Length: 453
Image (cartoon, rainbow, N blue to C red; front, side):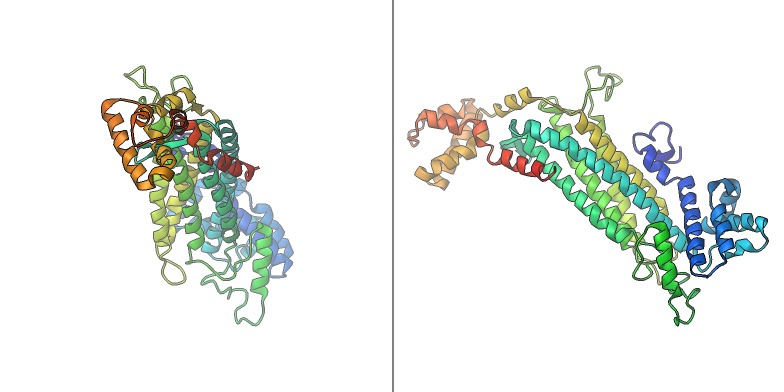
């Protein structure tokens, strides 16, 4: 194993087959050939190269012509795989008709091909991410609807705060993923852009003195061939497009990790309000038979942390010298593969958790009673505030909560016995019922779900 992507053991856990294929040597080389075929077709339409040459070049642009050992050797020698691929295309076409292959790669440079192929790979990755987001949101909609009225303790600084519904907790997650879907749409508009400018981006090989616009027309034809947008100007050393998609993936995986963190805390033996899907032996211990470890959550938090840290490398890759860089560009080759495969794996793990999420409503009800009523102390304070004054009510309820914690008496009994409180016990009991203090949890959940349909 040289990376998790090609690991027989970890490949389907810390990566996915679909994302790993997108970033494989075969797929990348296939896209190199697609670029060269598209360029030849575009240039033949404009009369820049002979139509017969374009036909033979396009015909040769398939993986069957590639000598992989030779491609490896030449890449190690030259430093980049594009020229070795072009050489094999040229050689194959020249074997059909001497000199015909020399029209390949006309007016292009290595980075034009490499950047455009990276965009095509990112486009495929975004398609996978978009599908995963749709599945995650579908699962969350169902859970939100099912549990929108199920009370549970909210937690602040890891302490019980006030009651909320479990559906409300999940609806916040759903709303976040919806925002990510919006971000993905916006990122596509800036990301899916052709790179074709030649040596320094000026297209001088096609429009040497700028008196004709054949270079622009070639850009347009090639962009159409590859179904990408035309760049407003060269972007060889302006890497914001790449950094932005990396940042999006960091946000996505960070949201998954927030969910995973909450879930593994809810899985604690002392809480037990929710669990990962039960699959026999999953998350089991080698020595403690009773253990059911939150293994999916563990992977999600780990992969999200790695994606975040790899994105600092993409930020470094933005600092490129002049018109063509010496080193920062290659950072992308190293980390994009990992960022994209880890991101898709994280989303896949998240979906799996949501699809089979176990919710323990009995434990939620039990935990709502752990504080003997003090979880609704805010409700009591607000109920007493109109007659006692908010601050006086706060201080009084604070003292009663402390007395309950030390002495073990239910808050309702202490409230009923307090001479300063004139409210009937029946009204106090309503204030002390967690179900009566869910606020707008249900309506907020409904609002998020409604906007998701």
